[in-house]
Image (cartoon, rainbow, N blue to C red; front, side):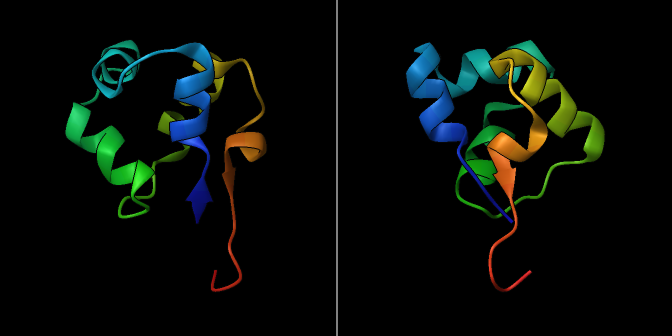
Amino acid sequence: MKNSLKVERAIKNITQAQLAKLIDVSRQTINAMELNKYVPSTVLALKISRVFDKNVNEIFFLDEED
């Protein structure tokens, strides 16, 4: 699964640390998601979508290998 977290953060001008605080995870978790090394839970994906005011599938999407 891939995501557009880095792009969404840039649009909102927030850091990994700020996003992490908003959704109650570590900055390292945000970094791992951006590097596609960590797939978030449904709850976490929903929290992220709320922060960016977008549908989950606008931020997270399957890649050809999924």
